[in-house]
Image (cartoon, rainbow, N blue to C red; front, side, top):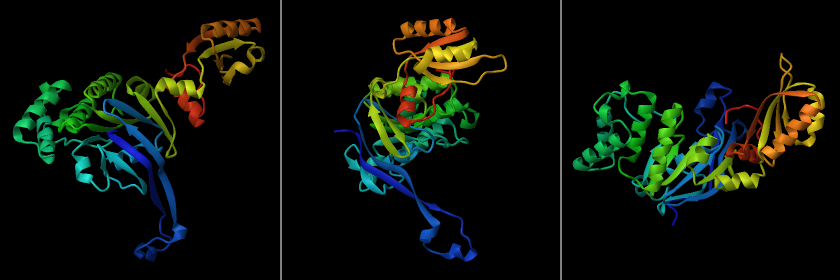
Length: 341
């Protein structure tokens, strides 16, 4: 049985427009002409097994956080259903809340005027843990998350990364089997983000079912067993990262910076061109070209470009990534060459 399951889950919001007249504020119900429906989540069905990290990918506003809020019982769905460990999130909210740990992005999930220990003690009491279990679990989590030497200091003295780690400790305090992590590495520096991803992998090995929302494709490729791409509230693709790359038909691409007779080079490269930039002040042009056979294709392309009178200032072969698959599947605009991998 999946520990997380949604069936045709849908959430609509009413868009309330400002009243045209002061007395419209007194209306108990808005009129039809002032309301629209925002479809935040549209008929989404997915499941997550124990010991699995499921990445829900999409841009800001795609519906990821709304999904997490419905699974955590903070929002009721408009239609469809969601179950945590077999319990319906609407009809059995108490049973669901005892089995989940929730960490939302961009929220102050801990109290800055308390120490790290006091924060965890308070949250332990809120989930009805006994005193001995709270003390034992606090020491264990602070040690595992590298905060043992700061346990009794005020949280307001913590760095952003430390606050995020304490927030994760709070999420894990009652050792829940299901974790809902909404962009857990948002606003973290690269080292802290890497450490957090490593800890998520440890939690998977412990048998947790983890739903992780993110718009960071590198993160999803690194830590997720399966990913679902959500766009405008709809789940448009779902599979293992490698399978999604294959299904999307994306290929390695050669990124070039050319100078000289670039127009002739473009003609010589032909249909393999994916993206062609504008000439810069020094005459250089950035180019992205399909390279289905890797370096073999790259060698052929560079030979054609140089034979046409172009100078190759810089080149890089990029293997197909989950980000490329996402762009292909969602119809997003292709980025130019030499963007960070």
